Image 1: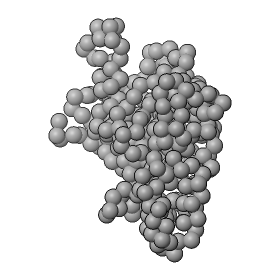
Image 2: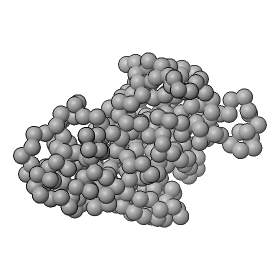
Image 3: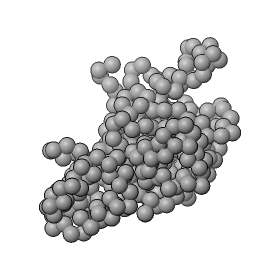
Image 4: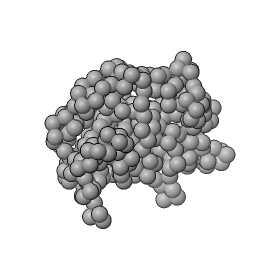
Length: 305
C-alpha cells in the first residue's frame, strides 16, 4: 500500500495510490460511503498510522468500493508524508565511504541528531540556498516512518513498530556543520548539527509513503542522487552499516517513538562534502530510491534573507 498526502481546498488529506499516477481521495470516498467516522484518520497521517492494520484494511475497502474517479497524482499538490510536531531523528555516517569524505570514523553504535519539523519541505518545494551558507549539500536517504508507539524497543521487535518508508533528502549546510571560521567550537562543543541540518526547507520528504505490507524491509534498494541529471550518489541500502533494528533499538532508549515520527537512516558517499561541489540556485536535485520513488527539488535563493 502507498499513501499520498496532498492539499485539497479544505486542507491536507490522505489518498490511496491505486495505480501508477492515480490516487483515491480517502476523505471524499469515505464521505461518499457515509463512513464519516473514518474522515479524521484520512486527514491526519498520525491517526491513520495509529490504527494499524485496521485502518489500512478500511482504506483498501473504501477505495475499492468508491465510485468517484481517481485523481491524477501529477495534478495534486503533494505534501510531505509528515505531520508537524512529529520527530525527525537522523543518523550520522551509516555507509562506508561517507566516513572518509566526512573525515570521521564510523560510529561504533548508532548515533543521531535531530532535525526540527520546521525544516520539512514538500515534494517539489524548493531547497533554499540561504545566504548565510556557501556550502549547500544533498544527502539521499531512506526514511523510516514509525507506526506503533514504543519506548526502549528491543531490536527483534523493531519492525513491528515500522509503518513504512519514504525518500528523505537530508539537506546540509556544511559551513555551519564544520563551524567554518570557528575551529575552537569543534574542539569544545562539537559540530553544529542544529543549524547545519535544521534550516528552513532542509528536509524534503516523499513523494509517497510505502507501507510495510508492500515493503517489509528497506533493503536491498538502489538509491541515487542526481544533480542536473548527473549522478552524484549511487549506492545500495544493503550497504547500510547499522540496519533498521539497531537504529530503532538505540534511538528509542528512554525516548518514546510515536506514529508519524521519522528516522532518516544515513547517506552514502558522493556529496559536496567529498569534492567541494556545492548546490547552487537553479540546480535540480533528484533523490531516487528503488520502489520508493523520486523526490525532486529545485534549489532557489532565499530573497528574504
